Image (cartoon, rainbow, N blue to C red; front, side, top):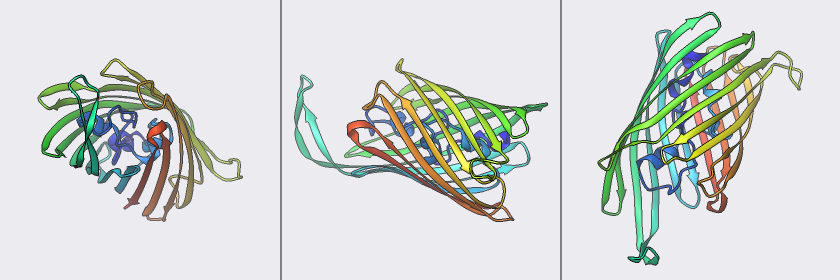
Length: 315
């Protein structure tokens, strides 16, 4: 399981270290990266649980929408290279058309509005995960991801950034069908607008379990977990979440997912942010399949983030 784990714990989204709880969304490189996460991970309170199951070659597209017009979107590919290495590449973009431009007075008070401005950005990521240890009941892997914001346009202002994330994950098998997982991720470590930054460190743990006979009398399973994020500004976030699925994730047929979670983010528009979502996976005997995921996440007076993802399993 670890071989497919963190390699792209956020293809089209952020791994355990990324959430939507960013102040001043739309300002800079760090905030833009924090807004990107998969619908799967967003639905479990921002806690990275399900991507530990991902295997084979995957082509995935996703979007994050904050009405009335802020949108993140992307497309990515991931696949295994041998039995121990997994690689992926992703492109993403952000658009916010016709935002009202506001100004402030010298004393910092509100000034006035001056027409509109369009914001358009694009960038990409390259990620890799390598199995470092496989001994007894333990599997351990390392993760590296390089993210670049190729261009940022806000009126006549153009900037860019480059950031590196480093981390790892471990799995310990308790008994057939159950396992404890642990993960950590630091970053993005990088440079933007001529200054270095180290945005956050995330640590998390979870439990994965398969049930031969579930509440509906067939094979089912669940995952629960929690994480803690230590932000570069001295702030602290935490999340808790879980997912329950009906059917077998690794077998042909249909699998239905229910997700729920919450984040505690004291520095944002809403202290406690509950969220929930669902997903549907269909697989054939040869491994080909489709998966759709959706999550809704309220952020106080700012409204709701809507996450959606569509993945094509090639094998």
